[in-house]
Length: 346
Image 1 (cartoon, helix red, strand yellow):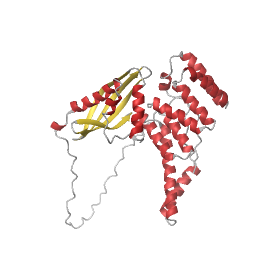
Image 2 (cartoon, rainbow, N blue to C red):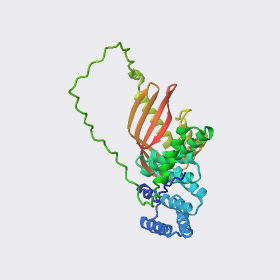
Image 3 (tube, rainbow, N blue to C red):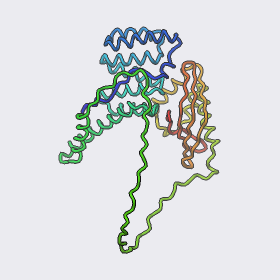
Image 4 (tube, rainbow, N blue to C red):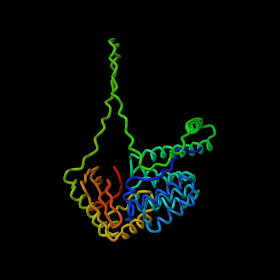
């Protein structure tokens, strides 16, 4: 089954423009506009030469690197393109477009689990990114198709699985969607339609004959989840832990920063804990100066030993300045609050 709607988005959100290097904006725009024009004319070799020349003096420029990934994709060099987009997600984890394009490349290689993870990251960073939501639906459909195929291999008489598989195949064969054209700005957030109130029908004037009364056992009443006693809910302790985490990050103290994470911390992409820690150490040690600010923290106790903290995070280094919404889930370990989950975006 083909997945015609898994789309490769071409240029870039306004945030990518803000992340460009210090060369004059007009010069950058002219050079990359020429590269973009060459791509539209299918002159990929010339476009790659021009963007490589551009990146020679601006190796960290997000726009140029993004364009290079697109060119490599068009040249049918998926592994090289994957490398470019992967490095972009590492350097600019707040941007959704590189994650989406990684998913497209992984899907083209049949690596649907990786494609799904990449799209989930795109949506986590940008919940209103419609293309990523649609692509994720297609990936789920492909994974479901594979599962139904496997079920039929194990049980040829499983008519339920056969019916579901036929429905998925019909969905993609009857209404194919062409790949989306290159976009030069992010898609608008999708509005959620509000259902109109439903008018209840007037009761019938006829009074039904009451049925004989029968003894009925009382239905169990669900008990509300216990609320932690006020004495055990100390928001100051939680806020102290979050501020200590931000302070260690600001001081380039990788060991102190990692000490704020629980042993069962759920890494953002599901990678091995050691790999994630190595990436974080490199990211923290690289900038000469880091400043991490916490604004308007909101603390919600889920139970005695678990709390959710949402705040506005302001990150500034010698190479990057960005603000985003951050959510941390912390758990109590002895007398410490440690981070178990971490999410960027609302």
